Image (cartoon, rainbow, N blue to C red; front, side, top):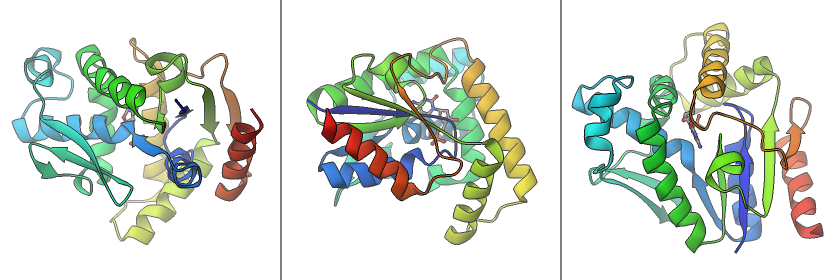
Amino acid sequence: MINIALDGPAGSGKSTVAKILSKELDILYLDTGAMYRACGLKCVKLGVSVKDENAVSAFINDIDLRIEYKNGAQVTILDGIDVSTEIRRPEVSMLASDVSALKCVRLKMVEMQRKIANSLDCVLDGRDIGSFVLPNANYKYFVTADSLVRAERRFKELIERGTPVESLEALHEEIKQRDYNDSHREFAPLKQADDAVVIDTSNMTIEQVVNFILSDVRSR
Ligand code: DC
């Protein structure tokens, strides 16, 4: 079984790298952030605060969330509806970060992630894959970059996608806030696993990051 854990903060380039790696190695790509984003969206649909642990714990165990694959790409399905595009909206990012801090949410999502990872070869991107979800993953990488570089990458990506975005400064603030949130929560925070290989991508292209990981995986 091949399990590659790719952790790191928002905008570090993990998801782009994970997608390419999954194609190159012909294994599945599991975007775990999409699952927390779907939980945030579910709260909005129910009119529940993402910080209200009692209200969230009342529905989370029965959440109708499915991860499927269409032509190799992940499709996130909530209550039978494909929400893959909706969960990418910038305002869903902070909701996902807040709801992901709740222990009941993490326990449920981690259970689903472990089930998928134990049955299929895959590369998973997230915040706590190497440190908590799959401590025994064969390959662990912690991908990071300077916060301004990450904000600039996100800014460019959103503009290219035609998503309205306030300003680079606002995006930078949001990224820093999310970094703080994700790394200071009590349960399974964003953390570099002791045995993870750290890759600072501030001055690297996506291709260089992919090649670095591919040669590391193939050399072992
Ligand atoms: O990777 P992303 O930006 O789509 O993730 C959205 C939020 O979900 C992120 O701010 C923190 C949370 N998350 C998490 O807590 N654990 C993961 N394994 C993946 C994401």
